[in-house]
Length: 93
Image (cartoon, rainbow, N blue to C red; front, side, top):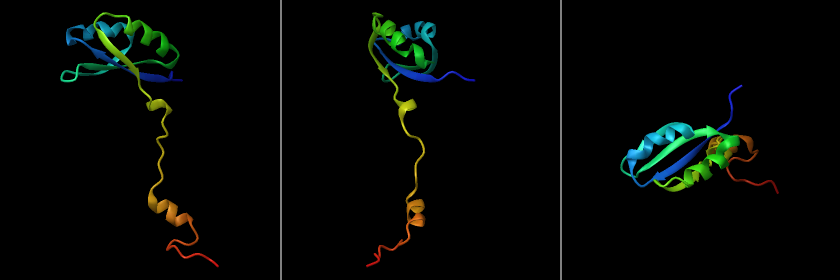
């Protein structure tokens, strides 16, 4: 139902051009101190958007966000111990 989205981190020379990034996607965050912006667009358009953004004169660098490709389900240490048959480290010999 919802399209897959991916973030793009855009490093800027000056923040006064950050409003121009609205044309390329949804601006999620703008850092004043580090001079970067995070914007989201559809995953199918990420490569095209990165090329367009990199060609702009006020952009230093463009990086993709790798969050959609990371595993976000983690196991706790307690779950691993509950599943093992020898939780105290004894081995059956």
